[in-house]
Amino acid sequence: MTDTSHRRPAGAHTGHGDERTLWAGWVFFAGAMLIMMGTFQLTQGLVALFDDGFYAVSSGGLVVDVDYSTWGWVHIAIGVVGILVGIGLMAGNLAARIAGVVIAFLSVLVNVAFVSAYPLWSVMVIVIDVIVIYAIVVHGREVEAF
Image 1 (spheres, rainbow, N blue to C red):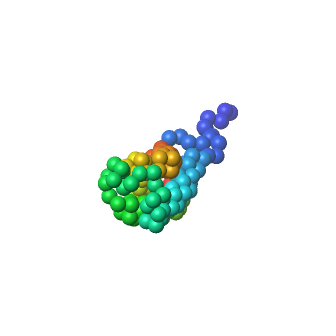
Image 2: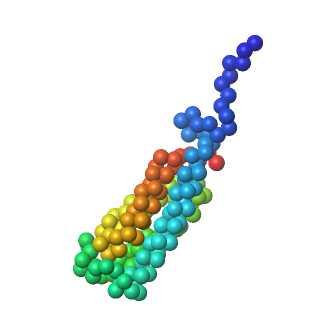
Image 3: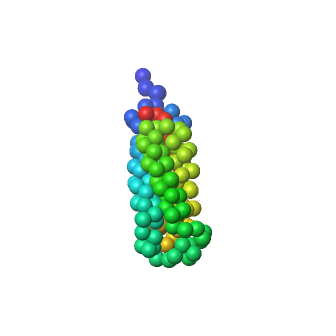
């Protein structure tokens, strides 16, 4: 007799979202990247609060003309939320997946507006945010299998 059952290797993905796949690692990676992004945002916020002379332009030279203290608090808020969401994402929380995309998108917007103050740092954070959004949007459902 011939075995007609189709066996898939462990971890194989059928596209139905009901099996464990190795792509779930992307979501854990996104969580780690969100924690790192949050740390970078915290650092950027603290520098804006305590040493506004550090940046390349005055606050009037930014896309949005507000003082560096305001920018500092915005970066700190995004950083704290990013770290918390990253931890939730690593735990497989659905709300953290949604919040992860939202906070990464907000981080991109803030860093685009802040890019003239410190271009290299802002571009680095934007790249991290784009990777996070990709990992969550494309592979977010994979983590539910765990």
